[in-house]
Amino acid sequence: MAPVVALTGFMGSGKSSVGAAAAALLDWSFVDLDAEVERSLGASISDVFSTKGEEYFRRAELDTLRSVLGDRSFPSGLVLALGGGTLMSPEAVDLVRDAGTVTYLQLDSTTAWERVKASDRPLARDKDAFGALFASRAHLYEGSADAVVAVEQKTVDHLAQEVATLARRLTREVS
Image 1 (tube, rainbow, N blue to C red):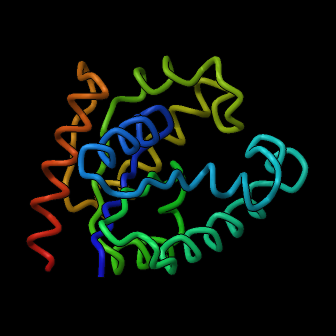
Image 2: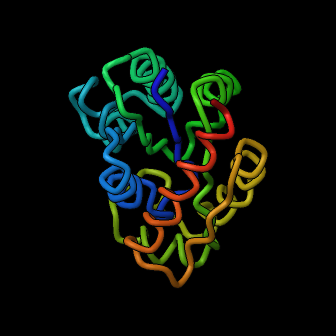
């Protein structure tokens, strides 16, 4: 079975950009789970949150995760950028851990806020609520991770190199 490296972390940690760059370095496939959810639902995450709510989105996210991890068309390997809240579901944690390894892209809440405050992300509308959400999720990321990569003061290329190096090491350890 091809190796899977899932990237987790809070909004703004760089999961999508770092994941795509790391996959290119590894010559693996790349999937952004948020983009896949949007594609499968035919709507943006913001629209889904506002019309159907977060609970609906989380169910769709879990279904999409199952589908992506069940797809065996990634012969070389897969770098999977999870959504910031994906690992709130214990079932999602189990699916990801059973599929491969998890790398946590760690940053502080101030940096995360600066990166996403002008975005249309539904959970990035209020700085105080954002900070509380950040604090509530940190243990999920840490508890699920096989490796932690500090994001601050690093370029996407540097982070992609770190993730690719870890991916090679971690996938050798589990094979």
